[in-house]
Image (cartoon, rainbow, N blue to C red; front, side):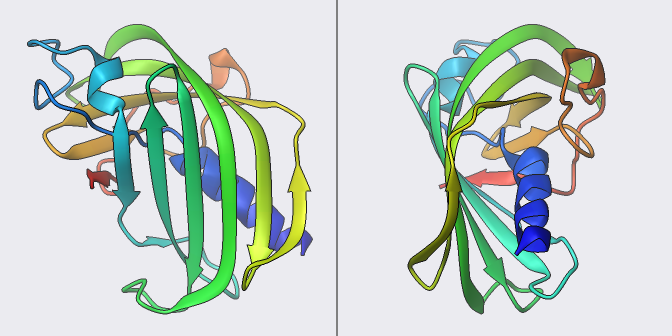
Length: 174
C-alpha cells in the first residue's frame, strides 16, 4: 500500500500541472490569450511507465477558472494503457502562476500547486485519503493542443523547481 501511495505521489508530482485548455491562442506565447485562459479545460497525459506491479498510468487533469484543479490518475497493466487495474487516485488542488521564462526552447511559466486533498481507491472502494496541503513547484508550457511540464519531479521548494520541460511526457487537450 505504501509503495502504491509513493508511486501515486511521484506520478502526481511529475504530472500535476498538466492543464486544461479553453479558447484563444494556440500556444503560451502571449499572442492573444493568457496562460490562465489557455489552461482552463481538460488535459490527458500520454501513457506513462512508472514501473512497479501496476507499471503504467494515465493522468487526466481538469483546470477550472479561479485556479482549481481535479486530477485523476488511473493505473494500467499494459503499455497502451488499455487495461486499467481498478486503482485510481483523485487529487483536488489549487494553482497560481509565477514568472514567465524560456525552458527547452519554449515559452513557459512557473506554476505553484497546492494539493488540498486526495482519495486513493481500488475498484471504487476507498483505500486511503488525505487532506493535509502539500506544495509543489513546477513549470509548464502550452503549445497548440499539448501541455508540457517540468522534467523530473516538481520541486518541494521554489528553489527545487525544474528548469527544463519534459517534451515526451505531454498532455493533450480533450
